[in-house]
Image (cartoon, rainbow, N blue to C red):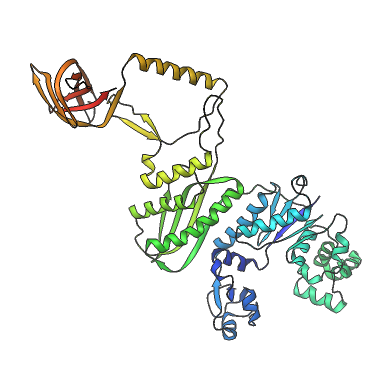
Length: 501
């Protein structure tokens, strides 16, 4: 078995810089708390060059460098960074193990035909982590512990050839195995400095003197895993969050912050082959209030501009009641529906491009105004509804039936006129003789009635407040136009509903 280890050094710092990329070149330190006595967990290379080291207190670090930027990393930020690392691993193989704190293992079985070499595969993994804002080191070996040590020792990409794990591990410092302080002190007194020297010790003698922890350390030094690879399916959880330095009560700076979260979310979704569906926003407001809302995305899309427009419309219609201090965004993943090509009709737009167009139309017009028109459950002529577009599966013979139906509609159109409906119907002036229309004047047309058919009564919805009763006529005017008009039986007003072609 060949395994790859994705290892992120100084994981708390990497999780912070992923959310605040503008701090990458600054002197930054991550602390475990907000007080001056809080210990530093990790420091950036710029801070280390100024003399700041881990395990110092915030007060001590600030005394060394007054310009040091000290931040804390929330559990949400660390969880999102670990999920992004696992997304990279899952984009190569479904057999992955999430070991937490910036470590993930990938089973490379079956990937040899996709890459020329294991070095190329490991390099592709490292490059893909950079695309998600994480600088990960990658090691490839025959066991988990060997791959982990290779990733830590390399500083970039390292591949241990099959059967050569022992020669690689021999000169590695034993400190990379992270023994406990007491065990590390004992090994130092014994003169054990490298993994090769530790692995050469008889395991029974080590167990007698150092106990189970020593036995476990020797086995790891020999490249033996504590437990085999335990692959588990990744949860479909795409979530990003950020804590703001101060409350934001203006829409534009809020959308600027939100754009960074959406960029990271859509990158993760695209890596897993998903599109962004509905967005769930969780806003922490000033005064310990919370605002939970859902932004409906009619057409799933990874177009950040369209998603931002949807959120903008939502917040403009229902603004937050207080300044926003923290933001969490959860994206519901949606699969891109495959489109079946047709032998008898030209290809339509690509599904991804169509989804982006629908998302932008939804952002401009509203979710209730973009979709497929449907006939409402009513006899009222202008009654209609709108439902979301759905993919249609084309079965065998569908194209033939579609062609036949099109031909039948063409023949029918040659035999009877077509009514162009006017929505909404427009009010007109009608002069009657013996209770029948004699002269009609409307917007853009006027003339005497030459021929008329009707009336016929249409009524419905008598069980609610929308009851209607109408008398319809089809009339031909002296100007040559043929129209459908009706008169409301209740208030006796006249309307034109359409014109015949």
